[in-house]
Image (cartoon, rainbow, N blue to C red; front, side, top):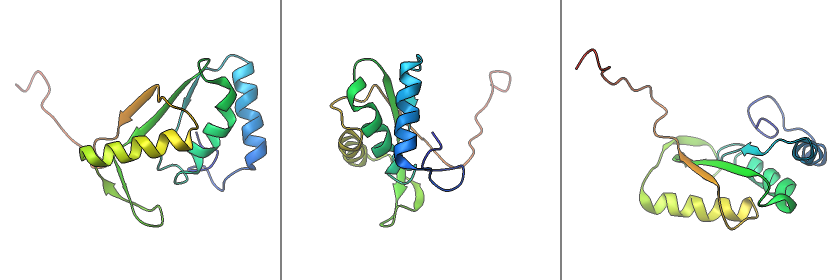
Length: 119
């Protein structure tokens, strides 16, 4: 979701909340975000917008980012203790007690593995 990250300056928060809620009313049920979007701002936006729709929508968010003290991306961090910290913080920002899809950003660097033909 590029409402607070990725596609230029963040849009007006109330307009984006209204847009997300309108999307739900029109049948959209999957919302994807990440702690790194904003950083943190997009999860807060999604949490506020969807607080009254729990059980009706699927919320996905990502982990594996290493963020600096000012939210800058420093690389990746997939240590178990970091995953737990991120999960707990995301739950608070998303204003929920469950994350429907919590998925891993494994690496920023491209990775090449052998194809079945090369094996």
